[in-house]
Image (tube, rainbow, N blue to C red):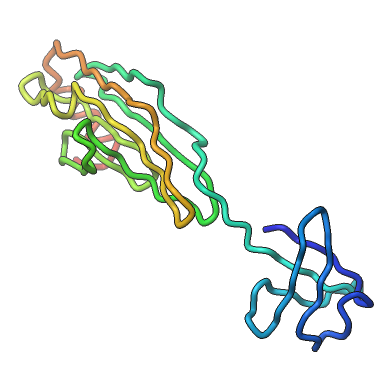
Length: 173
């Protein structure tokens, strides 16, 4: 939120409905009847004007274009964005449809992460472990889409002990 300080003599008394000031190349118009933007008097005998500064999403953390892991280690991809209002982050698959959690296979978290837990070779799913994903961040101002993220899980060893360790770590046992 941007804050502008306007001298009280420029704004008038606290009950005045409108005051205007050109500050930092922004024209600030205060209208208490419509309640946009908000203003109040502070201890410095000035009006404080707060503008709601809308901003479209920007990636804070965007995954690399290729994420590789083994079935014994599992993997993770993270995506986060900032904006005003705070963007919602979701994941799309190669078919451009939203992906969701598949218990024990793919965990889509509300914090913008996808976790691929360790898995047995027999549980390999090409549509999950050898696939393309995209991160989408959206708010009321707009949406942004990440580059394609190619996920490749190398399958080799049996993971019974890795799965047990993972279950203990995330409190599933």
